[in-house]
Length: 266
Image (cartoon, rainbow, N blue to C red):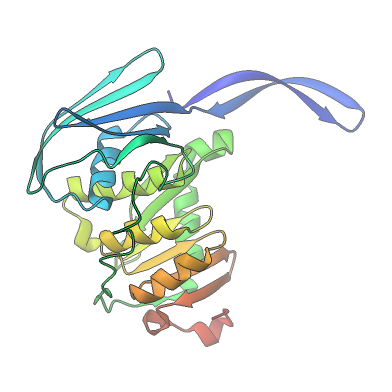
């Protein structure tokens, strides 16, 4: 179950009304890979296999396949036991807990944090006018947000403007991991041309987008300064404040068609 009902008291003007509220579920997920504790994160239940695979991919773990995946519910959360065939030894990079809002929480070292940001060579273009249509399409598939108003969403768009998948989660990083995990599981990573996210864009959202090789990232809210710097370094087209017919482009301008026509900010 991804939402639960709770009794709330609504204060509106001089009136107090009792009402039932649907709240997004938040639970702990412990991730064990090849018998070793890898991570614990707070997430919205559902699609845990995609989340784990996407997270491992974002961490640079080069997998050839999942041998097995088993999810066990406990009193305090869930445990994902995964066995994978891997070309490298997997270490518990996130042995400390990570919250649903912070993708970097639990990492122990910054030594290699900024390594590997080679520019993407993908030359696919995007029409600036299409961005608002992407979000309209995605909104129709955000059932959990429509019910609770309390979760993030991530989706991926192909070169023809089709929405390949949409995932919701209380954590914006988790939603992106679920998207990437789905792409990997369905062998569609090469078809992904635009990653859309709700909320703000931090450094690690850029990192996940880059690791997945997705050339364009759009967001509803603001980017951080480091996110813009790293998007520019990685040759990722980054657009934020994508609301209605407006967007602010920060990097990768060469991929964007008709910016001047729409009077979008660059």
